[in-house]
Image 1 (cartoon, rainbow, N blue to C red):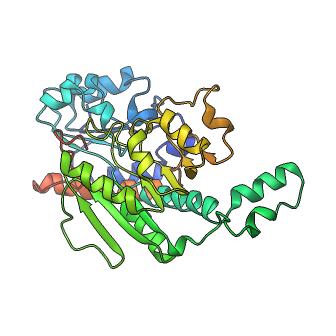
Image 2 (image 1 turned 135 degrees about the vertical axis):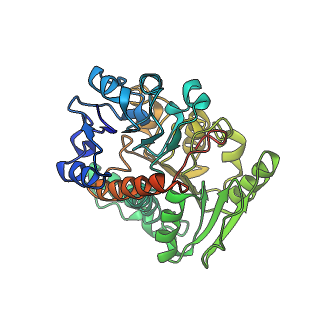
Length: 350
């Protein structure tokens, strides 16, 4: 029997919960409570869509009050149907956890939105600078073994300063705000898109657009018309899938840069390839794709104006400190009957 079950021993070493984290969570439990830290490797890929819970975890969760894993499989809710009160996922996305069993459950559900924000924002900044400062042109010259300075000296050179640009952030939540902080530090202006107005006034240099349904489409169109670069950090929901299709990409200014660190389904890949090949877009930095791993025959691999990373923008040794702090804070809030940080809105999908 265990009151709290940790299913966070990911098969990928960087995401496997360290011993110090287990010790801190155990020390924070009320007197008499027990913790079961699973020893069977978990698969947190795809927000927990991996191999499913182990027999060890299903047995441990039968009497548990709290389950913490990478995603919340329906089998976990079924096994803990009589006792579970709160479940938490170490992933930011919750698409794989919003199955019928979760939607019908009264169990409180929280996620790790924003915990991955700092490293993801740094990856976004690197991708933006790659194109704005012409590192792709320099890399091409290096591959060819020649002093390739001519593209930099042209009167119409694509090399420019990020500090003078307008960066549109589609999904101005935890990750989007981290991106905004970094690009504003270089002097860029920010336009952020949200579903609803922000709870507080945005900082200087940030303009917030918001809307639902047609209102969202109008706000997105305004952002696309004005942005020199667009960063996609929105969650995957029925409303956001395919939101950046052919018509949306055509609205971007010639020479704009697109960066996607959210989910591949938000961008029409065929339309993106067309916009990159035609030169309408200066470049694209992509960490996520419609199919992962990206198929070997995808034209994205061979386009010179594309930077590809294998869905690793959130990788950081700093993850576990932030994640444990979130878990401990929410554990205390849950015991006091207070609102949880990052409590998931099952209807909104995040």
